[in-house]
Image (cartoon, rainbow, N blue to C red; front, side, top):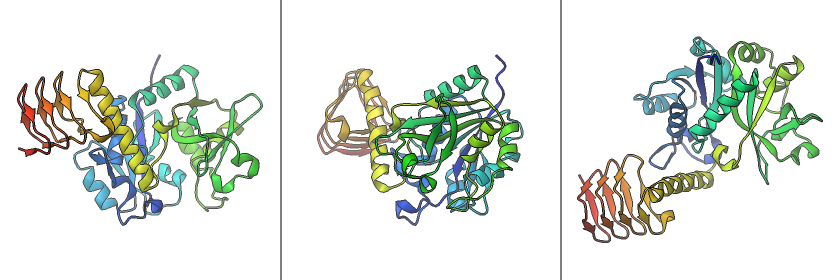
Length: 320
């Protein structure tokens, strides 16, 4: 199968007012780095080499955080909606045949999910593929409106949805795959006749359907993997999820972790087999923990080497 070049476009221009913060939402840190960086890591791990990041609010600070990343910055001078944001990236997508659009506030997205979506899009020969998921309480998300055959017809945003539409549990996860030739042509047709007065990216679904184009749904569960972070509460929940993913990986590799919900281990740290980590320990930076080490409760280790077989007493603080 001939696979076109893929460029990821990451929406990172918004203010994130629900965070109640003077700082840009996407720069809020969880599990050792800003949430935007988690999205970039997932895109890179999925094998997508070209990435454009759309910045606007606090763009100097956002771009400063990305100076060591291989990305193409795109400036959205005015925040006129998600559709307008993607239009700003047209020049940055010149070499692509296929565009993957993601939001910079979805730090739990997994590389394998993106790869699976790419595979479905190619197998089905779609012009547009939209990721969806189901929520018991879908308030705030765009609802998926399907036809009698179960095919997607359009998306209705929360603020524009009537009572029946608000009862729909299938929601837009905000990740799209679109053929470039269709995407930018469709976006130029999108108006701003909605409650926000913005250019909605979601309107490209209705345009594709009206033109008789092949639109696919990629339904992903569990929903937690694809949900955005919009508040400090959701930031803490996403942090806890990434923490448990890392600890599960370590435990399956032969590390004992008591109270894994309280233990933090950075992705860059190397933990040997038969290590025992007690509650409340924090291991950050690039630690190297040898085979058979016992790390006592509430230890803080940063950028250090612990020799094989060593017992680190509780409440130890150690750094290089």
